[in-house]
Length: 235
Image (cartoon, rainbow, N blue to C red; front, side, top):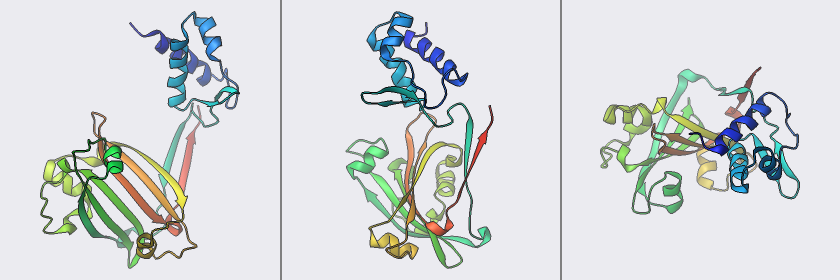
């Protein structure tokens, strides 16, 4: 039997997608849902929380619940546009280190007794550096911890495919991008940025089919070589 809050959530989502409410409209309150469906506060709140977590609603303290202004009922595609000659790209592995920082363990969904490996690389086109990806991997994806040739990890996905027959390219992932002014001189020096120039900080989590984290990546991209295309499909 489908839980009551799931039934309510489905009904409410249908109203949003059918444009009964448009982006920015005030949405039903907890009291409205309790009265309409004759349910408890717990059930009403759970239905609203599910829709809020999914990005369909947002709340303003003291004002109410509103329909998000993002295009939740449309398919949106984001694509990075490469602004450099693709044929000239090369990668240098700067370091591979073992770590157990609590913050990184949390990002990887690991316990405090676990360890991970930090792979720092620098991407170039020609002799120009443009991307500094720092990849954190659970130890289960590192086969040889002696790292006799760290350049084997110039392509981490290819290395993992070779060692474990696992295709990271096929995994689902979530990525965020923000403009930052790095205060770490190592980052600015590697990307040849002046203190007045920004970088694009990209944070990515990839997930195994069971939902656990496969990798956590923090990258810094030179602002000159970042461009994103957004495509919205009509409903």
